[in-house]
Length: 368
Image: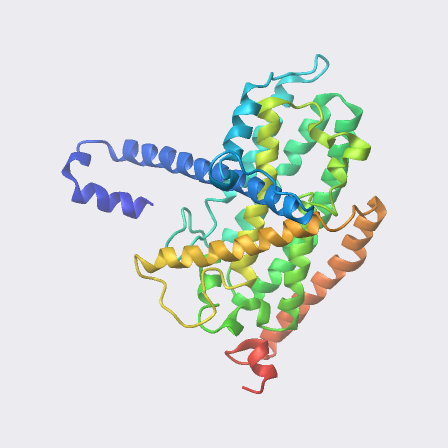
């Protein structure tokens, strides 16, 4: 961004009279607002998508009144929540109670700035981009435990304890399975990871070998659990805990929690597409680095993200909730050992020079 601003200052004389520091500050503030609007809109539309898909699966229509096909339903819901009374329980720790939803949303919001949406369409292109995203998403744990404790409600405390235990547990296989791709790619830079998957479809890391293939499903399952999506929705089990850690939240603050959940869905869907499914690569050789073609790449990545979001929604409305002990068993007895095997296997694949050629596992299997 700084290089782009320097070029803008050189080309437009009216900006030269403004101190460079002020220009950078204003640009950063505007960029943050742009990311906030972008995250809010796509998260709101994801809510609409889930309600429409759920309606179709239940032989009904879903929201279709506000805007074309109900696309503006999230605006009506937002206005309704803003108009509701903001209630703070008398026995709550007010400061912590107010800070909790901000912290929960902040992690997902900032992480969007590191995601690559196309070649050159990265607000903050970092060499440790994957590490930064996984670190930022873990901030939610702090906000959740703050919300549960500050509410001074047994339902909120139990829900917060469940979510913290579940998130911390499933972040282990989530991060370790992503490490398998890092070992194969040799970098934590998300743009470089996508560039290495350009060309034929078997260059995607999901097809680069059996270990990366298994790691993809481990990553997807762990992401579902980290997002508290059914069948891992124990922290918000309505039949047991009313609404979990945000039982005492109303109006706008409840909307922030709700928005953070769907923003996290989009974040992990994009991240899975970037790590395993080629990012903006369509699966055949094509140059998407040009100014106009970059938006074509954005459309390709967006389509992959929509597909993964549909799978998340489909799983939620198809499977019943797991028991608490089954959730922990799946994490520590199945996914965690399997993710470690994938990382060791990916490391051996690189060290032994058994990367199976340029075409990856699929091409090797076909004898190419």
